Image 1 (spheres, rainbow, N blue to C red):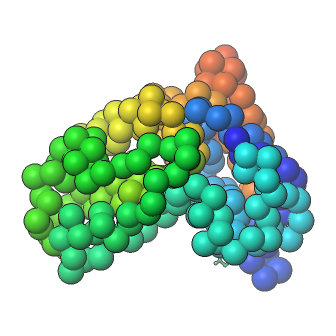
Image 2: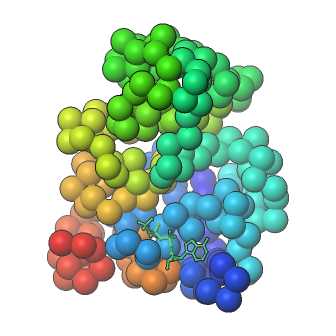
Length: 233
Ligand code: ATP
């Protein structure tokens, strides 16, 4: 569904991604793993074209998306949930969801507020509360729910387990498994290997912006030396 082919991304003169290549097959959950500063966020931003790769190309459903403006990438059905939660703090949970609403998309689930409240029961209880009254974990869930209101085919999640309580991390894992069952394709960046193992089919490991491993979680489990070399203990 998504093919990243030899991309190189830079911030000014800082060369961050080096000939990075991997694929995200349709209907799978792929974890992008690596230590702090390895280039995970830059990879997700490069897919969204928020950072323009200097070379290489990215294909989504066979169509080249490198060079498109970010809103066109979103329009093709790629939803992006950045690490920093982007909710409207003075709007209620329901109003935040309405802001994200988009027309139905062929091949994608058409999400309604009620479907999302089934998926995120905590948000249902807080539907009339303003964004700023929510906990960090609830804000993270609201950001994901609002992205789903855009009826994406493919979702990029930047460190969904980062900085949220363990009980919310468990709920997040359940949500990702349900999204997969609904047919969504997911690429998530993670430092939490345990969480990634619970939800992913495949993993890409990057170190200093280069790909060190791409394979199934079973392959990775069979090579603990790779895990030890490139992932935080
Ligand atoms: P983290 O887990 O800390 O978010 P990451 O794997 O997502 O790490 P990136 O945020 O992609 O890593 O950063 C990769 C490298 O690019 C780091 O060395 C970082 O300092 C650098 N970098 C990130 N954003 C910028 C920027 N706007 N300008 C210059 N350098 C940047």
